[in-house]
Image (cartoon, rainbow, N blue to C red; front, side, top):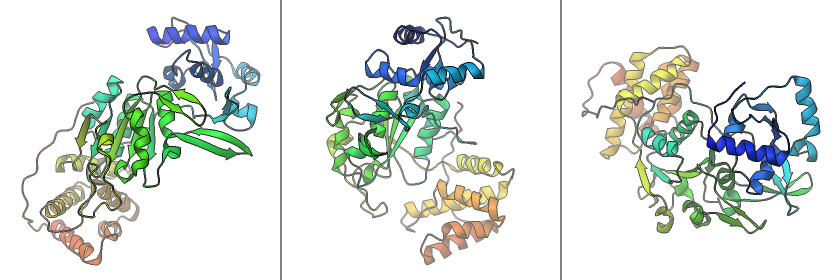
Amino acid sequence: MKVKMNAKRIDDVKAIQSYVGRNDRVARSELAEMVEKGLIKWPTWLQNHPDLKMSRGMYYVPNEDGEFAKDDASNIEEFRIANPTAAEQHGYATVSLATNVEVQDEQDSYVPEKYPGYVTWGNFNTVREVLKSEKFYPMFITGLSGNGKTLMVQETCARLKREYVRANVTIETDEDDLIGGFRLLNGETVWHDGPVITAMKRGAVLLLDEIDLASNKIMCLQPILEGSSIYIKKIGKWIHPVDGFTVIATANTKGQGSDDGRFIGTNVLNEAFLERFPITLEQSYPGTKMEEKILTNEFAKSDKSEPELVTNLVRWADVIRKTFMEGGCDEIISTRRLVHIVNAYNIFNNKMQAIELTVNRFDDETKESFLDLFTKIDAGVEIEETETENEEEFSV
Protein backbone atom coordinates (compact mmCIF):
# COMPACT_ATOMS: atom_id res chain seq x y z
CA MET A 1 0.00 0.00 0.00
CA LYS A 2 1.06 3.60 -0.42
CA VAL A 3 0.41 7.02 1.14
CA LYS A 4 1.26 10.48 -0.14
CA MET A 5 4.53 11.88 1.22
CA ASN A 6 6.04 15.35 1.53
CA ALA A 7 9.22 16.78 3.02
CA LYS A 8 7.86 16.91 6.59
CA ARG A 9 6.56 13.35 6.45
CA ILE A 10 9.86 12.09 5.10
CA ASP A 11 11.72 13.86 7.93
CA ASP A 12 9.32 12.27 10.45
CA VAL A 13 9.90 8.82 8.96
CA LYS A 14 13.69 9.20 9.13
CA ALA A 15 13.52 10.39 12.75
CA ILE A 16 11.18 7.56 13.79
CA GLN A 17 13.26 4.88 12.11
CA SER A 18 16.43 6.22 13.70
CA TYR A 19 14.90 6.43 17.18
CA VAL A 20 13.00 3.14 17.38
CA GLY A 21 15.50 1.06 15.40
CA ARG A 22 12.92 -0.48 13.06
CA ASN A 23 11.73 0.55 9.60
CA ASP A 24 8.08 -0.37 9.41
CA ARG A 25 6.16 0.24 12.65
CA VAL A 26 6.06 2.37 15.78
CA ALA A 27 4.21 2.39 19.10
CA ARG A 28 2.34 5.48 20.27
CA SER A 29 4.37 5.50 23.50
CA GLU A 30 7.53 5.76 21.37
CA LEU A 31 6.07 8.73 19.48
CA ALA A 32 5.23 10.37 22.81
CA GLU A 33 8.84 9.89 23.96
CA MET A 34 10.15 11.49 20.76
CA VAL A 35 7.82 14.46 21.10
CA GLU A 36 8.76 14.84 24.77
CA LYS A 37 12.46 14.90 23.83
CA GLY A 38 11.86 17.44 21.05
CA LEU A 39 12.95 15.06 18.30
CA ILE A 40 9.74 15.52 16.29
CA LYS A 41 6.47 17.37 16.48
CA TRP A 42 3.44 15.16 16.88
CA PRO A 43 2.95 13.30 13.53
CA THR A 44 -0.79 13.85 13.17
CA TRP A 45 -0.64 12.67 9.55
CA LEU A 46 0.54 9.23 10.63
CA GLN A 47 -1.86 8.95 13.55
CA ASN A 48 -4.98 10.02 11.63
CA HIS A 49 -4.40 8.07 8.40
CA PRO A 50 -6.87 5.12 8.49
CA ASP A 51 -4.54 2.77 6.63
CA LEU A 52 -1.56 3.43 8.90
CA LYS A 53 -3.26 2.36 12.13
CA MET A 54 -1.99 -1.11 12.94
CA SER A 55 -3.91 -1.62 16.20
CA ARG A 56 -4.67 0.50 19.26
CA GLY A 57 -1.57 2.59 19.95
CA MET A 58 0.39 1.01 17.09
CA TYR A 59 1.10 2.45 13.63
CA TYR A 60 2.72 1.39 10.36
CA VAL A 61 5.64 3.58 9.25
CA PRO A 62 5.86 3.99 5.45
CA ASN A 63 9.19 4.32 3.69
CA GLU A 64 10.31 7.58 2.08
CA ASP A 65 8.29 6.72 -1.03
CA GLY A 66 5.16 6.25 1.07
CA GLU A 67 5.05 2.47 0.64
CA PHE A 68 4.20 0.07 3.47
CA ALA A 69 2.89 -3.47 3.88
CA LYS A 70 0.10 -4.49 6.23
CA ASP A 71 0.59 -7.50 8.51
CA ASP A 72 -1.83 -10.30 9.21
CA ALA A 73 -3.56 -10.53 12.59
CA SER A 74 -0.96 -12.87 14.14
CA ASN A 75 1.95 -10.55 13.32
CA ILE A 76 0.04 -7.57 14.71
CA GLU A 77 -0.67 -9.40 17.96
CA GLU A 78 2.98 -10.48 18.22
CA PHE A 79 4.13 -6.87 17.83
CA ARG A 80 1.52 -5.63 20.32
CA ILE A 81 2.72 -8.08 22.98
CA ALA A 82 6.35 -7.09 22.39
CA ASN A 83 5.49 -3.38 22.48
CA PRO A 84 2.71 -2.89 25.06
CA THR A 85 0.99 0.47 25.25
CA ALA A 86 1.30 2.56 28.37
CA ALA A 87 -2.21 1.51 29.37
CA GLU A 88 -1.26 -2.16 29.09
CA GLN A 89 1.94 -1.62 31.07
CA HIS A 90 0.31 0.21 33.98
CA GLY A 91 -3.26 -1.00 33.90
CA TYR A 92 -4.57 2.45 33.00
CA ALA A 93 -3.93 5.06 30.31
CA THR A 94 -0.70 6.73 31.42
CA VAL A 95 2.85 7.19 30.23
CA SER A 96 5.74 7.66 32.63
CA LEU A 97 8.02 10.71 32.47
CA ALA A 98 11.50 11.13 33.86
CA THR A 99 10.06 13.32 36.62
CA ASN A 100 8.36 10.22 38.13
CA VAL A 101 5.03 11.89 37.53
CA GLU A 102 2.45 9.81 35.69
CA VAL A 103 0.73 11.66 32.84
CA GLN A 104 -2.65 10.60 31.53
CA ASP A 105 -2.44 9.50 27.91
CA GLU A 106 -4.52 11.10 25.16
CA GLN A 107 -6.95 9.48 22.74
CA ASP A 108 -5.85 8.55 19.25
CA SER A 109 -7.67 11.32 17.38
CA TYR A 110 -9.53 14.52 18.17
CA VAL A 111 -10.89 15.10 14.66
CA PRO A 112 -14.68 15.56 15.09
CA GLU A 113 -17.30 13.78 13.04
CA LYS A 114 -19.05 15.75 10.30
CA TYR A 115 -22.55 16.98 11.14
CA PRO A 116 -24.98 15.35 8.64
CA GLY A 117 -26.79 17.91 6.50
CA TYR A 118 -24.80 20.89 7.75
CA VAL A 119 -25.42 24.09 5.76
CA THR A 120 -22.45 26.42 5.39
CA TRP A 121 -23.29 30.09 5.95
CA GLY A 122 -22.32 33.16 7.97
CA ASN A 123 -18.66 33.21 9.05
CA PHE A 124 -17.94 29.65 7.91
CA ASN A 125 -15.65 30.68 5.05
CA THR A 126 -13.69 33.08 7.28
CA VAL A 127 -13.11 30.42 9.92
CA ARG A 128 -12.20 27.89 7.24
CA GLU A 129 -9.58 30.17 5.66
CA VAL A 130 -7.93 30.83 9.02
CA LEU A 131 -7.83 27.14 9.97
CA LYS A 132 -6.61 26.11 6.50
CA SER A 133 -3.63 28.42 6.92
CA GLU A 134 -2.63 26.48 10.07
CA LYS A 135 -1.34 29.77 11.48
CA PHE A 136 -1.73 30.77 15.09
CA TYR A 137 -4.50 33.33 14.77
CA PRO A 138 -7.00 33.57 17.68
CA MET A 139 -10.59 34.51 16.83
CA PHE A 140 -13.45 35.74 19.03
CA ILE A 141 -16.94 34.78 17.77
CA THR A 142 -19.90 36.59 19.30
CA GLY A 143 -23.64 36.32 18.72
CA LEU A 144 -26.99 35.47 20.26
CA SER A 145 -27.56 32.00 21.67
CA GLY A 146 -28.47 29.14 19.36
CA ASN A 147 -27.15 30.56 16.09
CA GLY A 148 -24.54 27.88 15.41
CA LYS A 149 -21.26 29.42 16.60
CA THR A 150 -19.88 26.29 18.22
CA LEU A 151 -21.20 23.92 15.55
CA MET A 152 -19.60 26.09 12.85
CA VAL A 153 -16.14 25.68 14.41
CA GLN A 154 -16.64 21.95 14.95
CA GLU A 155 -17.86 21.40 11.39
CA THR A 156 -14.99 23.42 9.92
CA CYS A 157 -12.52 21.22 11.79
CA ALA A 158 -14.35 18.08 10.64
CA ARG A 159 -14.18 19.10 6.97
CA LEU A 160 -10.53 20.12 7.19
CA LYS A 161 -9.69 17.03 9.28
CA ARG A 162 -8.27 19.33 11.95
CA GLU A 163 -8.11 18.11 15.53
CA TYR A 164 -10.51 19.99 17.80
CA VAL A 165 -10.44 20.32 21.58
CA ARG A 166 -13.40 22.00 23.27
CA ALA A 167 -13.29 23.55 26.75
CA ASN A 168 -16.62 24.65 28.22
CA VAL A 169 -16.01 27.71 30.38
CA THR A 170 -17.95 28.63 33.54
CA ILE A 171 -17.44 31.09 36.40
CA GLU A 172 -15.64 28.27 38.26
CA THR A 173 -13.16 27.49 35.45
CA ASP A 174 -9.58 27.97 36.63
CA GLU A 175 -5.99 27.13 35.72
CA ASP A 176 -6.36 23.56 36.92
CA ASP A 177 -9.32 23.00 34.58
CA LEU A 178 -7.63 24.59 31.57
CA ILE A 179 -3.92 23.80 31.92
CA GLY A 180 -4.13 20.58 33.90
CA GLY A 181 -3.60 19.22 37.37
CA PHE A 182 -2.98 16.18 39.51
CA ARG A 183 -5.67 13.52 39.79
CA LEU A 184 -5.89 10.40 41.94
CA LEU A 185 -6.24 7.31 39.76
CA ASN A 186 -6.03 3.74 41.07
CA GLY A 187 -4.32 5.02 44.21
CA GLU A 188 -1.62 6.83 42.21
CA THR A 189 -1.08 10.55 41.68
CA VAL A 190 -1.49 11.24 37.98
CA TRP A 191 -0.84 14.48 36.10
CA HIS A 192 -3.70 15.10 33.68
CA ASP A 193 -3.17 17.55 30.81
CA GLY A 194 -6.01 20.04 30.52
CA PRO A 195 -7.63 20.90 27.18
CA VAL A 196 -5.24 23.79 26.56
CA ILE A 197 -2.09 21.69 26.91
CA THR A 198 -3.65 18.84 24.93
CA ALA A 199 -4.41 21.19 22.04
CA MET A 200 -0.95 22.79 22.19
CA LYS A 201 0.81 19.43 22.07
CA ARG A 202 -1.24 18.18 19.15
CA GLY A 203 -1.43 21.33 17.03
CA ALA A 204 -5.20 21.26 17.46
CA VAL A 205 -7.88 23.95 17.39
CA LEU A 206 -8.77 24.93 20.95
CA LEU A 207 -12.36 26.14 21.37
CA LEU A 208 -13.06 28.16 24.52
CA ASP A 209 -16.84 27.91 24.56
CA GLU A 210 -18.93 30.56 26.41
CA ILE A 211 -15.79 32.49 27.32
CA ASP A 212 -17.79 35.46 28.67
CA LEU A 213 -18.91 33.32 31.63
CA ALA A 214 -15.31 33.21 32.89
CA SER A 215 -13.76 35.01 35.85
CA ASN A 216 -10.33 36.61 36.02
CA LYS A 217 -8.89 33.12 36.54
CA ILE A 218 -8.66 32.75 32.76
CA MET A 219 -5.81 35.27 32.75
CA CYS A 220 -3.58 32.18 32.95
CA LEU A 221 -4.19 31.99 29.18
CA GLN A 222 -2.38 35.26 28.41
CA PRO A 223 0.90 33.72 27.15
CA ILE A 224 -1.00 31.05 25.25
CA LEU A 225 -3.07 33.67 23.41
CA GLU A 226 0.21 35.22 22.31
CA GLY A 227 1.33 31.93 20.77
CA SER A 228 4.03 31.50 23.40
CA SER A 229 5.27 28.40 25.18
CA ILE A 230 4.09 27.84 28.74
CA TYR A 231 5.99 26.60 31.77
CA ILE A 232 4.02 24.21 33.99
CA LYS A 233 5.41 24.78 37.46
CA LYS A 234 3.68 21.76 38.99
CA ILE A 235 5.68 19.30 36.89
CA GLY A 236 8.61 21.53 35.94
CA LYS A 237 8.16 21.33 32.18
CA TRP A 238 7.95 23.69 29.24
CA ILE A 239 5.17 23.03 26.75
CA HIS A 240 5.72 24.36 23.24
CA PRO A 241 2.77 24.79 20.83
CA VAL A 242 2.87 22.50 17.80
CA ASP A 243 2.32 24.01 14.35
CA GLY A 244 -1.37 24.37 13.62
CA PHE A 245 -2.38 25.18 17.18
CA THR A 246 -4.76 28.11 17.49
CA VAL A 247 -7.52 29.38 19.78
CA ILE A 248 -11.15 30.28 19.06
CA ALA A 249 -13.46 31.73 21.71
CA THR A 250 -17.26 31.91 21.47
CA ALA A 251 -19.52 34.16 23.51
CA ASN A 252 -23.02 35.62 23.57
CA THR A 253 -21.55 39.06 24.34
CA LYS A 254 -18.39 40.91 23.33
CA GLY A 255 -16.89 40.48 26.77
CA GLN A 256 -18.53 43.61 28.16
CA GLY A 257 -21.25 41.89 30.18
CA SER A 258 -24.99 41.83 29.52
CA ASP A 259 -26.88 44.99 30.49
CA ASP A 260 -30.33 43.65 29.58
CA GLY A 261 -29.98 40.58 31.80
CA ARG A 262 -30.62 38.13 28.95
CA PHE A 263 -27.27 36.44 29.45
CA ILE A 264 -27.12 36.37 33.21
CA GLY A 265 -23.75 35.24 34.52
CA THR A 266 -21.73 36.78 31.71
CA ASN A 267 -18.87 38.94 32.91
CA VAL A 268 -16.82 41.90 31.81
CA LEU A 269 -13.59 40.38 30.56
CA ASN A 270 -10.19 41.94 31.07
CA GLU A 271 -9.33 44.33 28.22
CA ALA A 272 -5.81 42.91 27.98
CA PHE A 273 -7.33 39.45 27.52
CA LEU A 274 -9.69 40.61 24.76
CA GLU A 275 -6.84 42.41 22.99
CA ARG A 276 -5.15 39.04 22.41
CA PHE A 277 -7.82 38.22 19.82
CA PRO A 278 -6.87 39.92 16.52
CA ILE A 279 -10.36 39.64 15.02
CA THR A 280 -13.94 39.39 16.26
CA LEU A 281 -16.60 37.70 14.13
CA GLU A 282 -20.20 38.77 14.65
CA GLN A 283 -22.58 35.86 14.05
CA SER A 284 -26.24 36.67 13.42
CA TYR A 285 -29.07 34.25 12.78
CA PRO A 286 -29.18 32.89 9.22
CA GLY A 287 -31.43 34.53 6.64
CA THR A 288 -34.76 32.92 5.81
CA LYS A 289 -33.53 31.04 2.74
CA MET A 290 -30.57 29.63 4.62
CA GLU A 291 -32.68 28.66 7.61
CA GLU A 292 -35.11 26.84 5.34
CA LYS A 293 -32.19 24.78 4.00
CA ILE A 294 -31.16 23.94 7.57
CA LEU A 295 -34.63 22.74 8.58
CA THR A 296 -35.16 20.89 5.29
CA ASN A 297 -31.94 18.96 5.93
CA GLU A 298 -33.07 18.15 9.47
CA PHE A 299 -36.35 16.72 8.16
CA ALA A 300 -34.41 14.72 5.56
CA LYS A 301 -32.59 12.85 8.33
CA SER A 302 -35.94 11.19 9.11
CA ASP A 303 -36.78 10.78 5.42
CA LYS A 304 -39.42 13.50 5.62
CA SER A 305 -40.19 16.50 3.44
CA GLU A 306 -42.33 19.26 4.96
CA PRO A 307 -41.74 22.36 2.78
CA GLU A 308 -44.87 24.21 3.96
CA LEU A 309 -44.10 23.63 7.63
CA VAL A 310 -40.47 24.67 7.08
CA THR A 311 -41.56 27.92 5.42
CA ASN A 312 -44.04 28.69 8.19
CA LEU A 313 -41.57 27.92 10.99
CA VAL A 314 -38.90 30.13 9.47
CA ARG A 315 -41.34 32.98 8.86
CA TRP A 316 -42.67 32.64 12.41
CA ALA A 317 -39.15 32.85 13.89
CA ASP A 318 -38.29 35.79 11.62
CA VAL A 319 -41.30 37.82 12.77
CA ILE A 320 -40.49 37.10 16.43
CA ARG A 321 -36.84 38.13 15.97
CA LYS A 322 -37.82 41.43 14.34
CA THR A 323 -40.29 42.09 17.14
CA PHE A 324 -37.57 41.31 19.66
CA MET A 325 -35.10 43.69 18.01
CA GLU A 326 -37.75 46.45 18.11
CA GLY A 327 -38.39 45.84 21.82
CA GLY A 328 -41.81 44.30 21.31
CA CYS A 329 -41.04 41.02 23.14
CA ASP A 330 -38.44 39.72 25.56
CA GLU A 331 -37.78 36.30 24.06
CA ILE A 332 -36.51 35.01 20.75
CA ILE A 333 -36.75 31.83 18.67
CA SER A 334 -33.23 30.68 17.79
CA THR A 335 -32.16 28.43 14.95
CA ARG A 336 -31.37 25.78 17.53
CA ARG A 337 -34.97 25.95 18.83
CA LEU A 338 -36.33 25.55 15.31
CA VAL A 339 -34.21 22.40 14.96
CA HIS A 340 -35.64 21.20 18.30
CA ILE A 341 -39.15 21.69 16.87
CA VAL A 342 -38.28 19.66 13.76
CA ASN A 343 -36.87 16.85 15.89
CA ALA A 344 -39.95 16.89 18.13
CA TYR A 345 -42.18 16.75 15.06
CA ASN A 346 -40.21 13.78 13.75
CA ILE A 347 -41.05 11.96 17.00
CA PHE A 348 -44.67 13.02 17.63
CA ASN A 349 -45.88 13.76 14.07
CA ASN A 350 -47.94 16.66 15.41
CA LYS A 351 -46.72 20.17 14.58
CA MET A 352 -48.62 22.06 17.30
CA GLN A 353 -47.54 19.56 19.95
CA ALA A 354 -43.93 19.84 18.77
CA ILE A 355 -44.04 23.65 18.89
CA GLU A 356 -45.78 23.78 22.26
CA LEU A 357 -43.33 21.37 23.87
CA THR A 358 -40.37 23.43 22.70
CA VAL A 359 -41.77 26.84 23.74
CA ASN A 360 -42.91 25.65 27.18
CA ARG A 361 -39.65 27.08 28.56
CA PHE A 362 -41.02 30.62 28.16
CA ASP A 363 -43.42 32.31 30.58
CA ASP A 364 -47.14 31.68 29.99
CA GLU A 365 -47.84 35.03 28.31
CA THR A 366 -44.93 34.72 25.88
CA LYS A 367 -45.72 31.08 25.18
CA GLU A 368 -49.37 31.82 24.34
CA SER A 369 -48.48 34.77 22.11
CA PHE A 370 -45.89 32.69 20.22
CA LEU A 371 -48.37 29.84 19.72
CA ASP A 372 -51.07 32.26 18.60
CA LEU A 373 -48.68 33.86 16.10
CA PHE A 374 -47.75 30.50 14.58
CA THR A 375 -51.43 29.50 14.32
CA LYS A 376 -52.12 32.66 12.32
CA ILE A 377 -49.10 32.17 10.05
CA ASP A 378 -49.99 28.51 9.52
CA ALA A 379 -53.54 29.57 8.56
CA GLY A 380 -52.21 31.96 5.93
CA VAL A 381 -52.97 35.19 7.78
CA GLU A 382 -50.86 38.07 6.43
CA ILE A 383 -48.34 39.28 9.01
CA GLU A 384 -46.70 42.64 8.43
CA GLU A 385 -42.94 42.27 8.13
CA THR A 386 -39.99 43.96 6.50
CA GLU A 387 -37.74 42.52 3.82
CA THR A 388 -34.92 40.24 4.88
CA GLU A 389 -31.50 40.18 3.35
CA ASN A 390 -30.92 37.32 0.95
CA GLU A 391 -28.00 34.97 1.52
CA GLU A 392 -26.36 32.45 -0.75
CA GLU A 393 -25.01 29.12 0.39
CA PHE A 394 -21.22 28.87 0.23
CA SER A 395 -19.62 26.32 -2.00
CA VAL A 396 -17.06 24.21 -0.16
